Length: 169
Image (cartoon, rainbow, N blue to C red; front, side, top):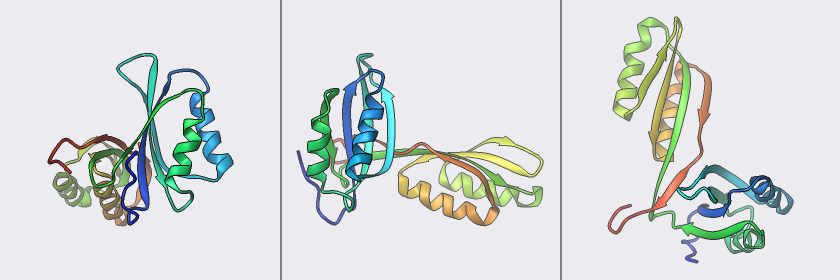
């Protein structure tokens, strides 16, 4: 296990688990019992129906990373644990957001959205539903940019990540 540089507060763990009922509850319960803080959690089946992949972003200020890994490794249904070094992983997140959008402000909103690489999903009388996929930092920045418009409802998926290919960051 590669432990990333201490200047990174959040670490991404990729945990392969058996695809069985109750496994996610056991993992969440472990974090709750130990007082470990989860910054982000994404769960999905893998290409093999027997396994699921959890992408867990852990706040290491709540617990040392090696302690989190040791506790996860004790769970029966955990098959593999890998850390993705913060500087050497490709991370993405999806945000879907409904924003107040009076007709006279829509062009400005769409201009911001185009620059960020997002899409308009739906347009209502006084609001618009938008989506954006990107690195978590870009999602954070775009969310902050939308606040003055008035966020009606917002949903973010949490991070998904893969190790970067050689030469990619």
